[in-house]
Image (cartoon, rainbow, N blue to C red; front, side):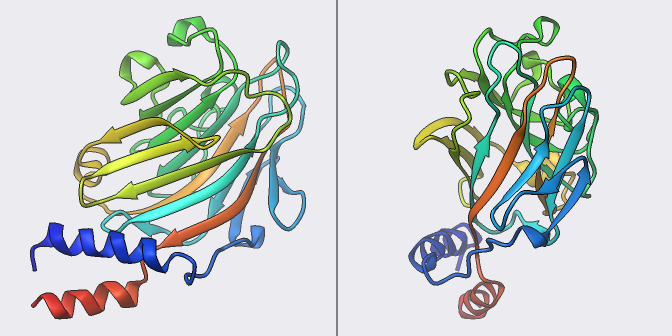
Length: 241
């Protein structure tokens, strides 16, 4: 069986088997950095509403970009609108490392990396639009002249509400989709393994956040994490020979 066909079958099977796959809802499975702390059995507070702090939460088991995944979490970006900053970045990186704080949101400076930013503060020198926005970025570079997708205006994110986020990856067509509040907000198609991560398919994922002079509490709450079963992959590889 051709590799693309095999991957397509795995994508379909992963979708069909999703209810049976174990959902990882334990915040204990995350490595915390900076000021991040566990709020309850589902949520991690990445930053409190304090100035010049940063926090991160990394899932301790890497995923393999050779296979499909779907990660669903809730983001909470605080309640300070005009006085709030800076946002959350959903990051893929070969190590569980956190970048620069403030406008860097814990993502700036990470190389190689892929990040999905949920930016709540306008930094003019980074080409930010006036509204809260979503963008897909590479290698810890936050200027939107280098964005892979976006920035996309998503309205006010700083209302204290849980905002459902789904990040899905289809290796068959090499497409990363970002769905926020039930709507597709950003999409990127490209050879992520080779062009972003230099041929390394195994990466960690996590959420990073930071504040500066302006601040917000910023949380991530785990809902459902679905990966292709390794045993299923092996079985289909056997059948394809």
